[in-house]
Image 1 (cartoon, one colour):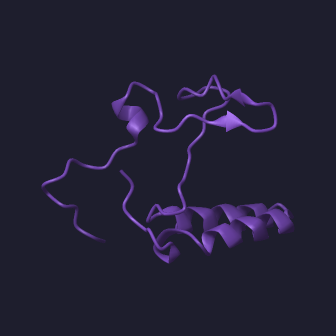
Image 2 (image 1 turned 45 degrees about the vertical axis):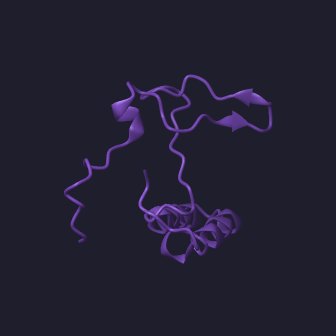
Length: 97
């Protein structure tokens, strides 16, 4: 486990620091409408992962594995392909901010 830089505050989800508002707003490209009711516990609560995030690969591999267990083979392969470009494999890999 890496030690955190003591000169920086502990990493937290931005929504915790901003009263439930996340860092990213999501647009539903199928409808052209912004996703609403996305506050903690809301019907459309979401979490955006950038592929350059150092932790993205592990998250996406776990997601792909679960999709495969449900028999969603092609979807699992699509997610695994994203994982193979994510986290430490991404040219701009960094700890999230």
